[in-house]
Length: 515
Image (cartoon, rainbow, N blue to C red):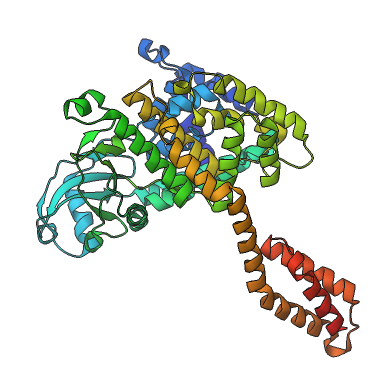
């Protein structure tokens, strides 16, 4: 009861801050929010500059004023156009994760506490003026005792406690919405907050960010066009991360890049290839590709920083994406629908034909545009908007990927509005499709699945033997062989999720033996 009371008080505080920035638009649809909206209008700021902003921009400004947790919440909501609409999602996507820096003395104390040595022994030179300050951490340039130029990321003091307190509130609100708003349950607000909590936990353990940077660097070993800084593990801990310093020109500074002699088309081709390889080749991608995290070094390679937000896509989902996008690009809308049904994203009770028609309504307006204007990120965003009609459950990993695709496309348009980055990557895409989704690849995958079944067959045999022993132990009545076979078959389906025709005879033989 005490916790609920604290949450309610915090909710009132939030409402008044939102009201000050006139950012409560749209809350009237939530049960009880209409009264709150009317009550807080008295506290609205009379500001001409604020009045000129769009609702999403006012909400972004309010969230920034509310602190680090709410900035992260706004960024999480920016990938939920299905929940808040395209315009507001776009405005929240532009939410700047910037806060005033905390004192350098606090950063030095954190480093010494975490690494167990004086800063002067760890770094020959440490710049007290941070080069970046965000909601969770800030970054200082330094030179190690060995003379290597590095960037040192340090968590904000007290950030763990602040996020823990606010996440309790977010979960409380999400559960309240699920209880009081049945129509919104399919949007899985509790799962969305859980995803946010998981993301924040990863961002607040800098060892995990270091591991992400190390994995991405390993994936691109030998690729001279995509550079990931090396981790200095000796000077890295839970709250301190030391990385090789990378330099260059920001990727969105087209004029500066041209003046430096770089080939814009080559940069875009390289960027498209790197993104495609991250998603489809490796299933592990940098999910925060805004221009502030991308630089072009002197050799023309893309140098990437900030590995706090990363995404993963398993093999099955990569195949779903490839099949779905290929079907869209070829105008085969029935195949688009079939892919969604096969993946289980659309309930089987829905009409495949109706869903195919909805996909056509999405694809035709987008794919009918000039090639340089086609946005696959926008295509995915529009697709997710039909979720309510067809009762599709939210797929957080796809929403994060869609947001990242939009960011990548935005960077490409900054460099050259007349070029589509996916067209530049087409040879790579076609090679991957042939290697992974062609007839030979499908046969290879089927053979691999069958082999996996065979490799696990001894385990199932032992399980069935134990089942038979348990049934007959102590004088119990044995089950009929057909019943034993059915129990084993069901267990196998649950555990494997693979075709089991190859072991059907084996199960029948085991059942007869137990009888």
